[in-house]
Image (tube, rainbow over the protein chains, first blue to last red):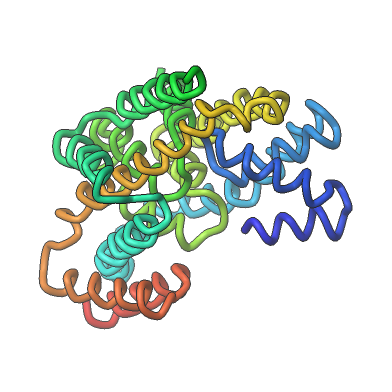
Length: 155
Length: 172
């Protein structure tokens, strides 16, 4: 997805320089929300301020919005068909596998170590078993990270 | 009233979706399945499957789909707008200040810590959906085969899910 956006924006249309693109990407990754949307906001704003931003976002969500809307409209009728039920019966465990694989891949890239393993593990248990909302954990984590970062800065 | 609830719920999901992709699943599950009971666990997984086979981010796909089921066309528009609104607000702010922010230790530290948190959230999503998916031997076999296909052979999720659907129709 990212290489596709980069080719359109940097090579084909010359809207951004490479440096501007990488800055935008890391900004998009540090903002909540889907990265593709955040990046389109950055690019749209860069080119034409508020209007550019609105159009870029709208254009990014429109294809998936239309496709999902059509599927959602048809889903009620199709869900009754035995063949579709059989397909989804098999799709559910496949989806679980698709969640399990990035879990292992990400654990290598996220700086996981013996000393901090307790943190993601507790998050998994609190949210997965005790149904604690991720909202609280995210807020606490951000507050702690800012506090820790500011403390380091002073030293 | 349902329109307002849809917008607010998806606004919240958008606001707290860090780490992209699968880390958001625990948040969607928490809000949509557990808190509001708009859909069941099985329906949630159907939506994840559909989302993986169609273009676009999963948070947007889930918003459009659930919004339509609960509030028709207007519901789907409001849910989709709800999930992208936090991005619009925060990203505008970040775009304007990013050059100053990016070298601050506290700013960098947030994302180091959130990366680890995301890992925990993906694991939580796995815990939430696993119990429901492993109902019979067939499901366990499909899981194992899909896991190997994705992990060992790096099979693209789209083809993997098409394959799983065909297997389900043929043998399920």
